[in-house]
Length: 364
Image (cartoon, rainbow, N blue to C red):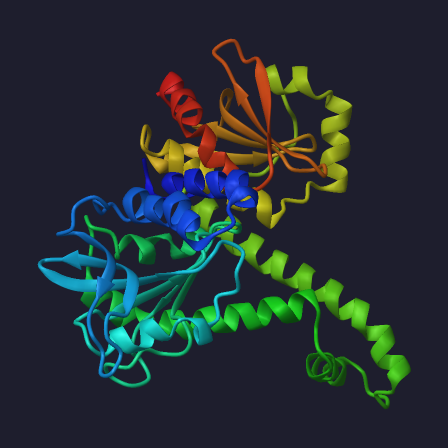
């Protein structure tokens, strides 16, 4: 399985089981060991690769243990400290990581509760663990952009120099993304005043702030979606990856949607959402193991967002039904009979990876 599929599988397990996990030891056994083994690829039963209850006396602290030390090339490379699933990842409860970081060769430290993983290094001061992580992974909200960085820490692709060289940028880009996300969800007074001052010439009274607050939230979301959609459409279009809904529909499409409905859709326009484009990218990433990525294209319609091979409606790979509160992934068999699978998030698409590959192979 690809890294994204392995993470999605583990994320599904965490979601299903975390309510029954009450202790740190259970968290380690149920979630953290599978992460080290399934996602990073280390043998958790080989003490030359993974050392549980790792001990290295630190000053007057004798016999203190850290949950796991991951060994690569005979050296401790990664230290892992675990908390109970659901517990906040506070560094005030991870003093062992700080102490052990300066007394071993490890340059990577991980603080986790089995669902969230915070990765640290020593950007601020050499040999002293930073107080803020350079990378965060949340199994409840998988972000494909961090997958390549997580993969660098795995057994097969471990590359310490590459990890460290990218860490500073990752740290600040991640922090800025989180800060911007907060502003897009719930802009604070400073952000609201800054934007009002750009477009409003009168005095910024409380009434004006109350009036502009909802407008700024709406405009921020629309602007972000428009920018991302435009860039993705441009990029996908240049690779043959995105096809707009055609002016007329024939063949199977005409059978699925009437000509009148198609024309009405054209008149009103079809709004492609960021979530649909992200879903398409996941389907495309899965299917490109079977066919060249350039052959996998998207076509948005009024009823669904379609993923096709060779921009041919007779070669459907998948359909994304994201226009309702319950999202569905539509998969079609050889007879073009569609089965809809309910999904709770984009990462659930990975659970149907083999069916997506089978559809791509069918038309290859």
